[in-house]
Length: 363
Image 1 (tube, one colour):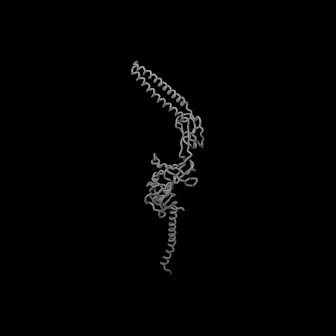
Image 2 (tube, helix red, strand yellow):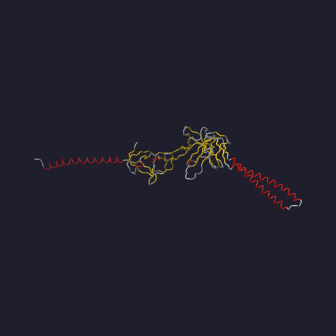
Image 3 (cartoon, helix red, strand yellow):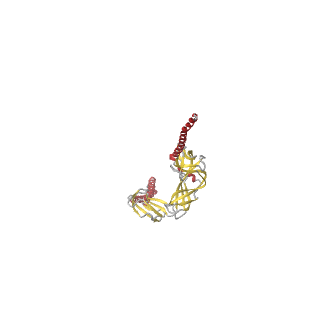
């Protein structure tokens, strides 16, 4: 006869074995579920490393070549354009007539000024002859000295009127000369702004003329780069389309900037005669860079705490505050020691990322 206690113990073990197996299965399922949930919550991002900058750098600023001699030609008087002989692209000589103006007031005004001058000259001649006769009468004692003084005073006034009339005639002649538009230098007609028959306001540009000599390029650069530059210094200039480098000489450097502009003008004369106006160029300026760190601009975001980046630490994204010293192209040069060389930072996927999030780095 079997022992009842043994039968009871064996029955309990058999009854508990399924429960233990079920508990182990549930525990394993919970662990796998947590890992799957963490993987599903990971934010996919792309990362790069913090780079170091040191030594010299060449910065290039884009500009367009233009003629050193250039002018917007206009009339100083208003009127209808009577003739225009200049055409776009035409080569012209210095002092060549390019256009004429019709103003109905200029001709009569000059004629009136000339007639006024002739009348005053005739009056002075008559007054001087009268003064001669009065002087003879005064010498004979037949005329008081007061009459002679009055005659001399009248002649002095008439001579002053002659000077005024002569100045008015010169002014009228100059205004008539302004009705003829001449080339101030030899060059090429770049643009025609008004046609024959149109009304030209005083000072309104009619033609654009460019010289056929040397060319130059003007670029806008930050003020701190102008410190090491001076007039007469040679700097390299790259031709954007021909993929070659030419030599340029600084002729002008801005010392101030008005308004909201933070860039200063820099004018460079080009030594290559083959460069024509309108060609795209890049002016190179050498910058001595200090040892510093740089990150892509895409990696920097603005938050409530200021400018920040996300650094990858142990599979999680950590927000780090940074300070930008300068921006060159698509790179932001940092100041301070918030980051270290080689740190892994996020540059894509920032909009879905928060501090402490688990990340999955895409290749």
